[in-house]
Image (tube, rainbow, N blue to C red):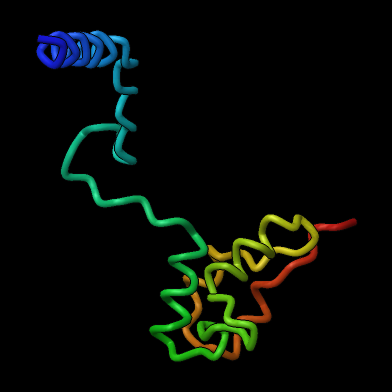
Length: 107
């Protein structure tokens, strides 16, 4: 009898606790605003590094410390001191022209 009572109490508590859970959060809105079918948004550093890789540029390769081109690009852009101008990089026809896309953002 005690076992049956213990099981009933346990089940009741579990059901009550299950009702106390928070409702699931709102799912994130897709990058296309929920329109569906739109291509995923690719950031400028990903596009620039992809283009450098297509050209076979050494800048597309990981650094000696293992940082990817995208990581380096994002870090440089976030620094605010220098810009690699990823949009410029995506327009390059030759690897030799990469330096022309680098600009100082400090006065």
